Length: 380
Image (cartoon, rainbow, N blue to C red; front, side, top):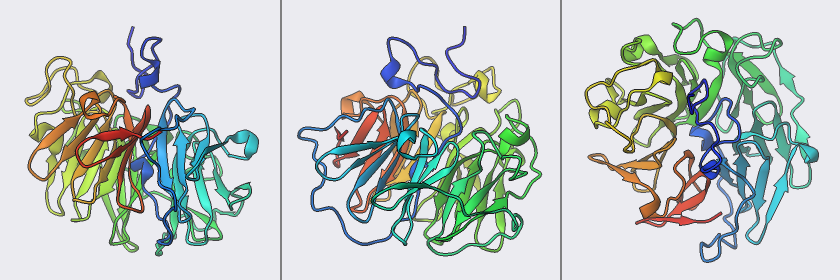
């Protein structure tokens, strides 16, 4: 019997439950990407001297808000806020739209928004309120503005009947306008509505927004779309097709695409490189459509860079990758290094990489960890 679900995520096991997910639907990226106003930092920063433990099996999203609070979204247990002293928990009983929190954002109007597996919920400092200003009249009228926020389509896997086709919501501070992706795209690993279910967002310094879906990645600059799909990446059954879980544009303008099964692809503005295979860190996987190894695939049970769920960048310009079952990896522009338990990173599954308002790098999965420059400290 396989130890994986249909989309390639691990099933829980009674001996390693703390490493695996209680449930799985469509992710993130850069699950932790988001826009937040640049104002105050907290008077009291978290310390690893006596870390508080979150009551979450898996943390998949983080936000450091303008008031200094740290927010942690779970895989299926709601959200928690750390105010510098203690943790406060919020669930659907408090008004969240869903227990699974894929992304957390702060708008310049001061509202903190939680993207659930279904629906969006805001927090104004006192109460949670579900989003209700939804506009479906401009589905093909795409626009982009500084400070706007983007949220996934309304079903757990793809679009709702009212949305009509896979796409994303743009929040301008008052209204959520739904926009459909520029389809059709060549079918990939997943077909139909679910094939273009939104798995993550990334905002570039240029203002361009990237949208990850299972079968394709869309980049929108306010006027034009850039599309990466199987055809663009030259993928087929022999190589394994796209199964995208995250996208990230770094400070140099490079675009990184993370897949669950075929690893990372890098677009430098001109050329696309199979980054995972180039560094000999791939692995054959049935869920990616491949049954035999390729040159450069890892042989045996060693860590690999083929199931990538999160990508981020630290203050020094290093690129970080979070994987399922293989911890985290860092690319310094020349070499790729693996980080695991010996480096303080005791979670094998890393589904969130986030840089806070101070510039500190955070990594999350089964626990929340902060990079201290040489290793990781368990923070929550």
